[in-house]
Image (tube, rainbow, N blue to C red; front, top):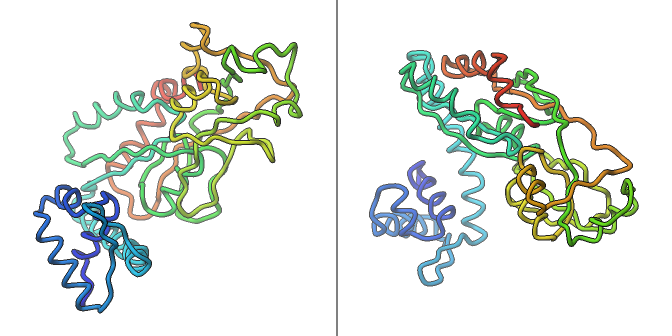
Length: 303
């Protein structure tokens, strides 16, 4: 077989890091070894896989087709390894936890400290997701556990949930120089529609992307995280709701102005969710930890 898992990992690393040198560093190998492996594969297949521009290397159409299907194989192989390890001793080699951007990730640190003190040896990988991205991470196998997954779970089997909180403590805020800052009384949707909304981009890869509080036809600026959203609103680039814990300092300093709306923002449930297939002891530890009242209070404060 011309295509091996090792070659797929090499191609994946080059695509993610943009060059053979950076990919080699990430794989703890020398660039010449990667160049040789890719050149041999291209020769065996009779096609080129990369466009090379100086030090940059980008996949061409053939290479992208190979990588897209190859990533499914890598994911399946990784899942097989994890399943074997779980069967061996019950503790996962790695537990992948996706945290929605609405929750300050540092609020999870006390629980992580307690987990490490237990000395089970499981490696923890944290990732940030937005809106449907937490559900997407579970359904695609990118995460084993999700914290703050918003709204309803996707209609797929193999996912269990427990309610974390109902998210409702949001403020609608604009910069002092924004046209809506001087609006008298509650602002109607018809007026909001005339102004650009700042939203955090949904990180779903396979599930349909979700939006919250966005009006149909409204101009949108999408930013990568909740703090970038606050900064964009402070800069007067647009309008939107912010968690009170994010907006508090800017409101107090006068960098943002809180306004009322004629239509209130609907409350949104946030969940703890996890993959039920082949669950291990580390996942069970976190599920129990995240159900404790003091942990729920810590994670959900100001949401």
